[in-house]
Image (cartoon, rainbow, N blue to C red; front, side):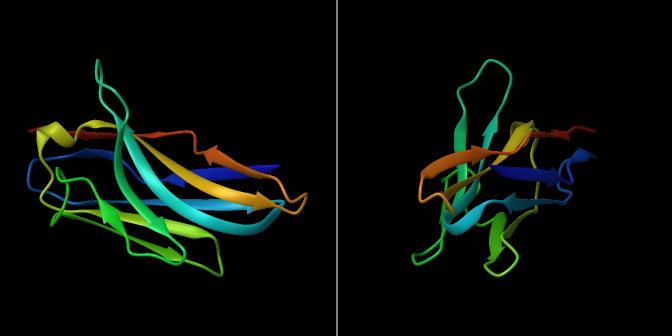
Amino acid sequence: QVELVESGGGLVQPGGSLRLSCAASGSIYSVYIMGWYRQAPGKQRELVASVPTTAATQYSDSVKGRFASSRDLTENTINLQMNSLKPDDTAVYYCYAVVRTRSQVTNTYWGQGTQVTVSS
């Protein structure tokens, strides 16, 4: 099995910054993609950033220029640096990874979610 553990998040004032981290561990053969989704109350889950192993990082239009995500390919970790935060960024943020396990099965795995609240 594969486990994703997130850290970071919390309460920040508008215009502030936060950094989220996520680490994947377990029966990992290779990781194809890691990234972040978020879900605000009453809204659908939204893709925030997708960081493929062999392709360019993609961001949603709503965070482009403010958020940056990077991976450590050897450690199977991913970070999300969030700057110039707005109240609309308030949501639960979920890390995900598309992983090929040592059993040669490919699945998508999810972190437990971490709350980000942007409020004065």
